[in-house]
Image (cartoon, rainbow, N blue to C red):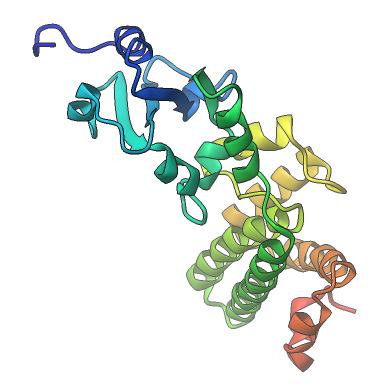
Length: 246
C-alpha cells in the first residue's frame, strides 16, 4: 500500500488468511477487550507463521500505523511469547481471529493466562516482600513528615500489591489501563472489586496511613493462609509499624 492508501486491518486480515504459511492471527490490546476500544484504538495483530515457512508477509513485520500494528512470528516464538515477560497479560486476554490449527492457538493463549503453581508461589513471595518494603517506607516517611516520599512509596507499594494479588490467583497482572476491566470481568477471589479499587485510588492519591495499614492487615492474613508467613515474619518488629495501630 502507498502512503496515500494506508494498509487497513480488514485488508491485512484478508491477505493473511489467504497465505498458506499463516497458521493464525491473534488480536491483542483494546480491540480484544470488549468495550475498551475508542476512536484512537489501533489493531495490534500477531501473524503466526508455520515454523520454517516463508511468507511475503514478513515484510510487514514491525509495521506500525495509527490503525494497525503487526508482529510476524513463527509458531514456536508465539508459544514462548510472554513466558515470562511483559507481553503475557496482553496475550492472556488476546482474541484469536483466525486459526488454521483447529483450536491450538486458543490453547496456547489459555496456558499464558494461568501461572504454574511453583511460578505463582515464587512470584507471590517476591512481590509480598516488595510490597511490605514499600509499605513500610511509606508509613515511616509519613511519620517523619516526608509527604512526597510517603506518596511515592505508597504508589510503589500498590504496584507490588497488584502483582501479589494476581499471583495468588495464578494470573498475570493486567496493565493499569485494563485493571478495572479485568476486575469487572474476572474478579479476584475474596475481594469486593469496588472496595478494592476505591482503596487503591485513595491510597495512591493520599498515602493515608490508616488506609494503608488496614489494607496491609487484610493482605497479611491472605498471604499467611497462602503459605507466605515466613516472608512476613522476616520483618520482625517492623511489622508493628506496618499493621493497624493498637
